[in-house]
Length: 116
Length: 116
Figure: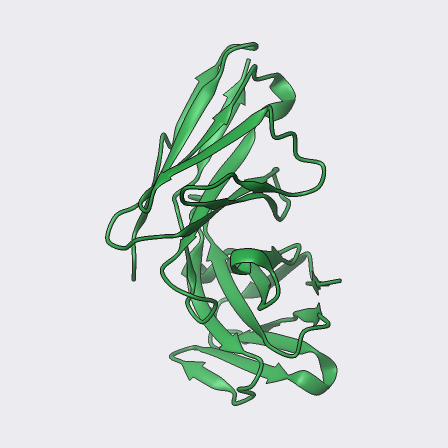
């Protein structure tokens, strides 16, 4: 069965520190998609990245970077030089080809607090 | 990115009444929409997958008679919480895919339901 685990429930860092949010997934499918979403206090989910299972290239977008390792079933997210505005709950999610319509299975979320 | 509008953002209702939540894709057609429920400090739990023109597919443990889902058009899905009780108080959030699995799911702003 599909499952997404975010072992870190809460992380607190000081501004300008780098922080990595871990995500480990389980799936039997060979074709799947992984996502990261940010949920600020307002509640709306903000899309950050989508990665398909055949593309293991790491990706960098500004201060954000993602490390996808199929060998360890991990899709970790790093924020470089964190800022107070990065404070939010971050969710990792999995979508399998076999699931109807491609529903998303979410991890438990990691609450990131960046202090000035 | 594509826009998904959810209405209302907040609603307070009395026990025993019904509440309807709307989810609209504003600038794209969504053949599939998803409804999630999120308790405080918890992850998003998929309630059902809504397909235009057909019956919704509910996740195990979700009462289909209590949470009525209608997907009448390619841009609108509604969730009606019937005979609401205080335990139905939660954050409900919808999402829609613009295309196939290789596209991100866009989320509405969420609806905070409080049943008193």
